[in-house]
Image (tube, rainbow, N blue to C red; front, top):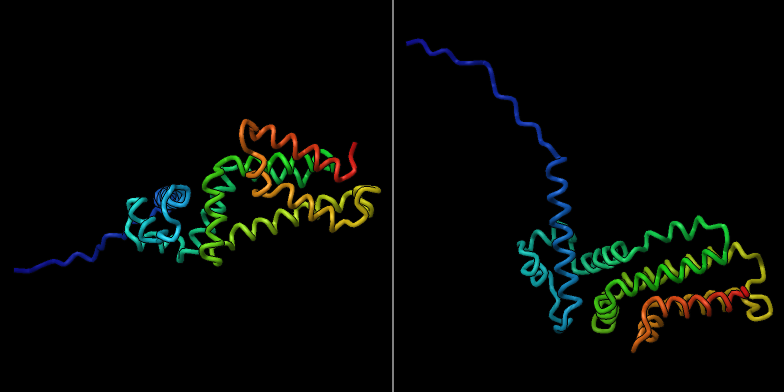
Length: 213
């Protein structure tokens, strides 16, 4: 019996990356939200681990490593996730604002809004730098970025920011960086003082320091 072999082969199915991409991003966000829940919870921060995050997110540990490679990169990712959720994208408007007074007001309000967006998680994330100094990298990087943003903003004011009140630009940058820090917000946002009230108070002080009436 003669057997005829077909020379036709089935073409491989095209890989549709557009379908997979949303699933990958959804898994990444689920991992970040699980990390957020653990860091922002009431448990012992020293018990934080990639395995604990995997259990919370409902994925295997290797999936967490696939997305973030290390514990530190996971915490870096959480910091970026919190910043995005907290509205720091508004900083683009700050940089584009030609009026320094309006820009300084917007910068202060933007960071107060960010700090208030998930106060407990941010507080505990920053506290992890005390428990494990390497974990402090992401918040410190963001603090450096905030200081640089203030320096760039003040560069629009000319050579004598603050008039007679502050002769040295570095002093003004130091004070405004401290004024807009999480620690200042956290200390002031107590009792009945709302985030809006904190923003109004800090804005008044910032504008006064910068020499605006």
